Image 1 (cartoon, rainbow, N blue to C red):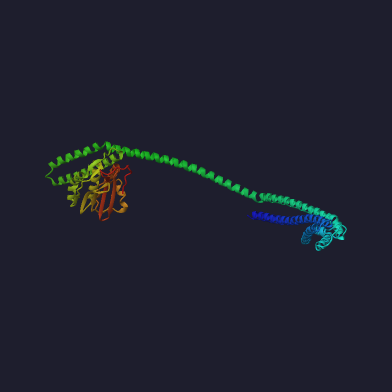
Image 2 (tube, rainbow, N blue to C red; image 1 turned 30 degrees about the vertical axis):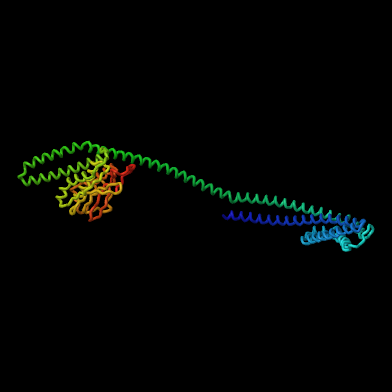
Length: 479
């Protein structure tokens, strides 16, 4: 930074000196040009004055004499003015050479010019003077102006021109010197300032290039590691998917084999019950066996329904479906269970027709209604339908313990059970809502939930009405 400032200061000083010298030379050149111009004009005016004096001396008429006199008087006035300009310029400039050219007693222009002007002004100041070829005034003019005065004017003009040429040469030399000094200063600046700066910039560029190379290597290594990790994760995901598919296929294919022993067990229990009706203790044991068998049956049925939904074994067949028969079947099926718990199960009447698969919809609502009856300890459960625009909402209302807002997403996961007061964990394994969620997505319906702790919950299945305009299918939304 300091070197740069020094170089700039040197260039500024050089520029200032150059401009000062340039303006000095140009001022001298301007003065010299003025002197050359005025001196040349003096020569022309002198010749013109001599010519008019000769015309006056040889005039044949008074009119010719007066015309020549008027021209002589004007030429005399202009010549006096030019003489004053030259004298003032030489005096103000103060150049010894200019002063000697104009005021030298022997060779200067001032003395013969003043002598000629004295004669001319005497003639111009006397209009009635009879100027004849032999008059002394004409002899004086002819003796001084055509010879001595014009000769000195010519010499002065030539010397002024030589001075001007010398000034031109000085100006050219000054320009050349300025150019050389500027070039030398720039070379010194390049060697002293810009070369070290260029080295510094080059080092920084090399460092940046090295850093970019290192970053590129690190990026390549990271990309390799990411690719390897991605491949490992893909392999693990594929293994998990294959295991899940295998599990689902096994459950779907083994549904008959798994349920058949349970059905046989039920037959054996009924036969055994007829034989031990008189033994209270045996009857209690048999009741516990029936409860265990029912629990195992519900578990297997839930697992099989979930596996069927995951593997795509269930293919929905949407069609116009009246909802009232579906709601009535569910009411009759779960009514005794609600009545046994002292609950009031209400099924609202509806004439709505939905575009849905009735079997899958009934399985969804059975899970929702079964959960409501199972976890509600007092009050009642309402199953009904209402229309909003082009959509139908089949809703299940309960007066159960409610679900906290932080748990309202988690309950749709497999095997999710909440440790809330009023929930009997022995009555379910946490698959009912997961199955309802899978089947609702499969149908393209929305499953919505609103709940408040201590007040109850509302589950709703939202589906299109059969008479609604059909829209392009979109991803189902779970609220």
